[in-house]
Length: 160
Length: 222
Image (cartoon, rainbow over the protein chains, first blue to last red):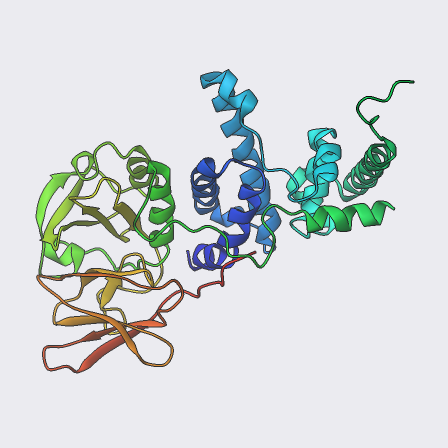
């Protein structure tokens, strides 16, 4: 149990930040609580590098919460957005256009600062698959950003 | 270009690393499941003792309390009820009394670990529960107080012979001090996060009985 105490003290802020980056603020406490409850239950199976494992648990908990909300209040679920990239509208728009798998691997690297090996643990895939997914996602995001940058809406009143 | 994309995305992190993350105020839980986080947080710091035969011996303190149904301890707080079940509390707990508006309940779970539930009776959400199997043994020469949760509030259960419980920072400054009544202590002061280095217990003559280091606190941010 000493192990749990240490894990909680070391990683609670990181787990909370992870959840905040993916969930509305009013759901954060619930999801962080659930994540550490799972950790407590399964303390014997937590690996030495606990943080990616905790992220993986939080990710599944987030998915469960979204499913529950979708069943309970479909309209609310549809409109309840996750936090977007902040302060960069073009990036936010391009990022929103990616699939969730792409977004998540990019978040793990750019926001959580994980290595691809640790990101693979979170995503439940092999390191090779994660690397491929990451590079494809990064390219897709770059393409979308370039496309957005080259798009110039016509000024009002100009007819062609 | 694509590496720039990652740098740009990192710069747009909605919860940047190093920025303090939101923490719910200690014991000021706004939702039921936040209480579970508190329960889990508290659980890890509560030491245990071996089982004994009689009730007072089971708890290891003079205040044996009165037996109440576990379901009546924190009614309506589903996640706390769930935590009690997860930690094998059993069907009854001992009501130790109410001090300064905080009702305390204690028992030992199926593993012999000391468990505490508390209820700020005049508050809607200030509830908590925890028990744990740290190898430490309360009460003992080294562990004479269980503050709940450690390093955030100075309230909990103290061993026999403890007259005062103090929260002390790393420089030896006393941040809060509260008397023990019937093995219970409650200080109304919220302690700044991360400020408490150890919990100190004193006897009626002011002699230090124990110094218990609190769990390490991480700075805010990720």
